[in-house]
Image (cartoon, rainbow, N blue to C red; front, side):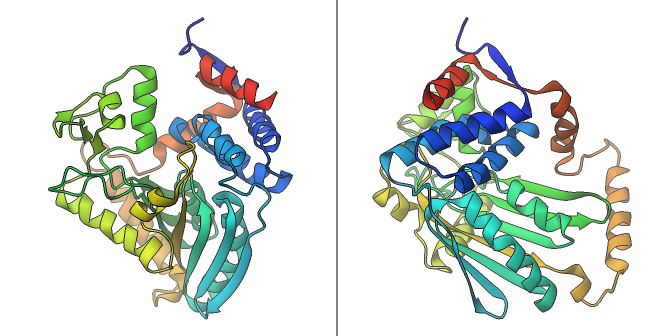
Length: 340
């Protein structure tokens, strides 16, 4: 059996395997369960670059001592519209879950609220953090940084992280509109999966070690750099993300995270900023929902049938409870070894 032949798991098995691996490596039940919910959600929705693929990195960070697998986040309201969660050097999912309820309450009281997360190790997709807020009836945005892997427009040296930005919009009884995008031309996890599976990436994704454009994912990962999407436009948004999730809240910029990281394959320490807005508080009463649904209807009726963000994830979500998910046999064996 080759390492890329698929191995099928149910979602319950994904959750159980994730918890087992994390707890064997030093996480307590609360942290392991929070990370497992994130990993399982990614597998459920077909976001394989943020699912079990990430689990060896999570485990490496526990074993190296970089991440405290028993951390208990501390919540503080530092201004009428600002909630701050100190993750205390733990993984991000538990800190995010801890801060979500006070953020929602604050947004409903104030109309707009911010959640600043510090001393966390973020390794997951942002849509999983935005979607619960949109399901609660709030519009939301989130951003976080990483380590330098993306060269700013005009440069050949990595300086930005992939610096994703996510947005969610509530749709009443329907699943919310949610998008999550790297400010790099491709998410790093997607490039890593392409390298693992032997696929080329799209032109414009990165440069090789000599500064030449390449579609070879291995050349980008080993000595090369990624590129921002849209040239100067993506570069400017990546810069904004650095300022919001590091400069604004007192956390590490991407280059600072790299200088302090143990390079164990897991997530560096950093920060995250989430904004939540209550549409009912902005002067349009309850009319905003019908107004926006009319907008979405016009969008979907355009020639060519454009697809609203998250449509494909929701379709995957409907299928995987019955079909399960597949991962390469080599990854399954690696995780079984960790769990043992």
